[in-house]
Image 1 (cartoon, each protein chain N blue to C red):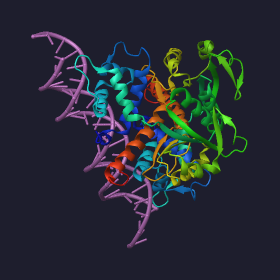
Image 2 (tube, protein in one colour):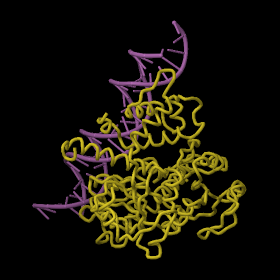
Image 3 (tube, rainbow over the protein chains, first blue to last red):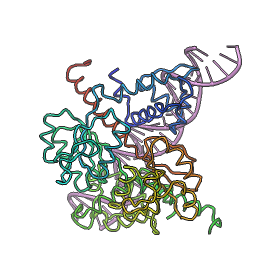
Image 4 (cartoon, rainbow over the protein chains, first blue to last red):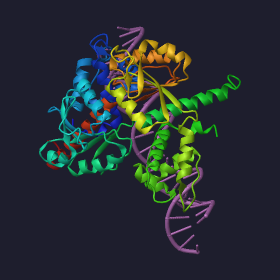
Length: 223
Length: 223
DNA sequence: TAGATTGTTAATCGATTAACAATC
DNA sequence: TAGATTGTTAATCGATTAACAATC
């Protein structure tokens, strides 16, 4: 059981998260079972990859019938979800932070945002999307008593590094970084970047390059 | 020049976007030049990778001096930015959509959001963050006359696929998908997922697994 | 020069895909 | 059975890292 952690790459964890979300959609699957190739199609992957991921997860399928959906969803939940609920804090209650609050409430209610911090005096003390905004100066004292290992950082780029250092110093082990700037943390801290700026630039760039390539190869097409 | 497109992987494009953002921060680099190992440290990469990326970009450095920062920033801009400005539309003006609007205005003003659409009658016609919200029913007619190739999808999960199909049918070539659901599109359409739910689950899961591994190794094999 | 860095090729690593015996 | 699918190993692919001659 424990050695599962060794064989589970970050990419597999990501895909398992996606599989679960797909399988939870009512009516996504016709019967109670799903074939690897069906799940693959819905997740834009390959059947072999799905089978490998599920093997790493430790779930067995049935030749001819496929994988039991409820069993699968439960197994992924056992891996991804903390049985005691995942407690996280949010730092930065700007538009992005508020969107994250709303998003979590709507899509991931099992994720408990136990506190939200900002440095703007106009926000401190106010209720935002059902959460009371706290003073960022109280971050350390709050973390001394609260059992939290993961933080969401949604502050401006210039403040991301400083905030992260405070979080690391306070003992946090995971950061989801929405700020459009990379942060440097010790090896034992997990950082996941959600990089909106890069995603936008990447798509725009690749679309432009492929359009240019087409124009080039078709030569006379648009000239 | 044109064959650059072939050697540029998506990952390289992503990193180049990050490099530029780092280099644009005032005072990030001491002088006018930067060494590959310096840039690597700031981007949490390796010097060899930086040199490889810049080689793919087609920028030459100088032994002993390193790479000229302004030259580098310009070269990355030539690759990433459309000289005529990148025109995109936004579909879905909920919290997430609004956060994206605000984000783009603050961090990527060169990205032109030419229209924002929603299906909520309460939003249609209103100004949101400086953009007038249009009726989603007018999507096709708008796209017939507007030169847009990229869309940002920030609608609820259940609507992402339907909206994407309309965008593809209207001729769009790139989609940045913020909805917590995978979308299926033809091969010629570029999709970049920004998956907040998965990022949160991944970090929480990996932190939990590594904490369990530590506890396990500290106490002996099985806890 | 001596020392440090670039540009680039070769080696390594990890992740994906293909293949196929086992299974129902 | 015949046919389709799983579980798993081997082959492939791509991306990262190491190494080092060329350069200043």
